[in-house]
Amino acid sequence: MRLELRKAFVKDIQWGDTTKLENNVLYVNMEEAKASVLDDENFVDVDLDLARPGESVRIIPVKDAIEPRIKLEGGESFFPGFFAPMEPVGEGATLVLKGAAVITCGPLVGIQEGFIDMSGPAAPYNPFSGTYNLVMVAKPVDNLEKHAYERSLRDAGLKLSIYLAEKCMDAKIDDVEVYEKGTIPEENEKYPDLPKITYFCMSITQGLLHDTFLYAADMKNIVPTMVHPNEILDGAMVSGNCVSACDKNTTYHHVNDPIVLELYKRHGKEINFLGVIPTLESTVLAGKQRSTWMNAMLAKMMGADGVVISEEGYGNPDTDLCMNAKKCEDMGIKTVVISDEAAGEDGSSQGLADATPEMNGFVSAGNVNEMIEVPPMDKVIGYEESIAYVSGGAVESLREDGSMYVELQSIIGSTNELGFSKLGCEWV
Image 1 (tube, rainbow, N blue to C red):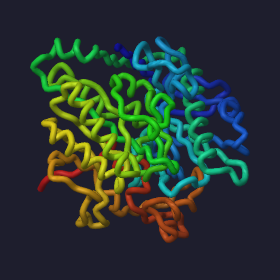
Image 2: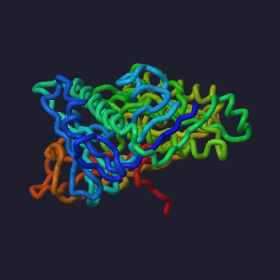
Image 3: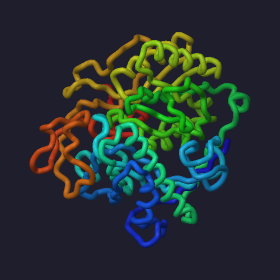
Image 4: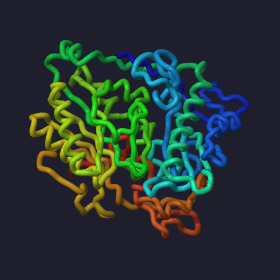
């Protein structure tokens, strides 16, 4: 498979008469952009707003973030199964509006949503304080069932991101990144002496607004499978969950998965990158046993010498993490796991809800319970009162002056377990 990501850099976003990218400025026609999503009968209205790096702006509660992309060659539209024919992705050429993001927001659906500050002490904890954001606040009809609202909001965010990219298909390309890798037998023949590495991308698949989609299929209804890393980078995975904001893998995170990118960078030099296994996090013991056995057996059949395992969420999924590590290690496959920790405000509590001695290579993405004080913002997009019900927040978190005292877990992406953050730890 050979994939070209043709990147057009976005260095500002403004309203305009025509939606286009010109001189690295993304101009958006507000009414046309709204019309692209207002055909959903579950919405009373949709408001659009802009948020730029460094501005005194807070966005709350955030549902998802999507990078505007569209296929230029080798496919139609983007996000197969949602708004494109059901076909494989990972080949051809894809336009990326690098530096832009669509942020979806609306009345609280689940407790595990969060906020983005575009400036101040919370800004460095999330990647979207550094992107030029088109923010969509969708207002649902009265008494709309939560799952229906979440589905409509997810679809609207994807539609809006495709709309932006489609209107910019003639934009000047500033950079091209090529990702090319053959079949496993082909790569094994090229690099017979390099250690063979695969990647388990653990994903929230627990229902109750905790879902992830692979080629538009709800992953809780499928068994683990293997995909080419190009498929991940080209929109095969979509977020549909309200897992705690700190370690939610948004749709933006998936197409920019730093583990895939880092393994690709080392492929053919230090390692032989076999592929990606998007896998489940079940709520029941039998489901955990099934998926982790299948993960380990897939890795063994691929001939893996080592596995990188990333978690999504914490608590219940910690058992899946431990089982994945143990089963692989028992088969002689070395593992490194990436997780955040819920170690209490002072970091002295047990970081995970489960443990196993075979999990001996651990990368921490930070402590979700660490407290942070954030100042008031000049502008709030969304519903600031929702912090009272968000994981990591409380009724007393929002003060009269608009400042907040919250846990890191209320900030979108602050301890992201793909390593897509600035947090971590080091031995002292």
